[in-house]
Amino acid sequence: MDFSKALANIVDLSNNGRCYSYTPLYIRGKRVGLLTDEIVEHLKQYSDIFKIDEDSVSMLPHYTTFRQCSRAMRKVLTDLKLCGVIENCRNRDYPVYSARNWDRLLRLEKAGLALFGMLTIGLHINGYIKDARNSIDKIWFRERPMTKSYCPGKLDVLVCAILKADEYGLKTFPQQISEQASVPSQIIPKATYIGDVNYLHKNESGVYPSCRMIYNLELPEHFEPKNKEGDSFMLLSIAETKQALLEDRFTLYSSIVLIECLKREGIISKKKECHNTLFPECENPMYT
Image (cartoon, rainbow, N blue to C red; front, side, top):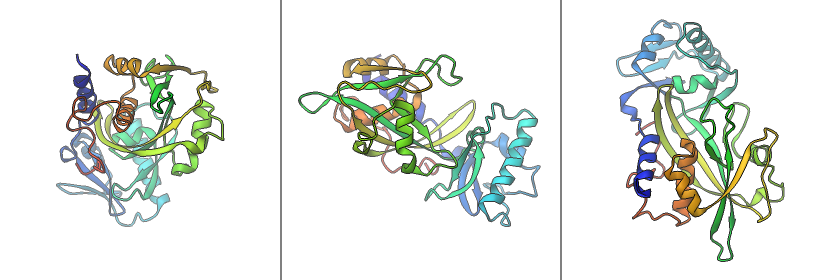
């Protein structure tokens, strides 16, 4: 398979969902999720929580606060876990956002986000070394341990994080970079925001509307990342990075983030190598 076709396959796989295939979920009058027909059927037993119409599901209007909405959804999720609809709950809460303006409306266990098709927001940092011409020469990647349940042995970009319920965007930025890669504090402010990638992915676990906030960070030539989890890191040339993409060695979200970085840096050509549907800018994954 040639490189352009490999990129096209990654894009098609990541953005393989269409919101019109699902029933929208509204909480406090705002769209927050995309429901499969199966989940809508399960929610019909909760007439004290939801109003179910032909083309939408809405939490009842007397649920008006963050705490009330969180408690109601936690009850539903607990019941669905007990009856075997959902597995692998880890008691790690994440924020639930409105699709339009990212208002935080409630908090929910991570496993529930995909079940109810709720938006996740990730922070991702590409860490690289530049050459004498000020072009990206090599890129640092983190190899996921074989003990991980998701994509063991796959490669990630230097830092990958989904914002948790008690985290607020860029306030957690230094902490994530320090914990995941031990980047010196004086280097962290040099990270540059390059844009977002939005997509709607579906698989056997559920529906994943996602926004990935991407940063680039130039690192010193002699820097070597490490973390307390003992992850392995590797430094790849641009040619090796392209080959790794071709061989499907990256997690899906890191592939997406990496492609966007290479595109914006001019390392891959928009005309020759990028798929013509490669992540339209400002496209909302909950409305496309």
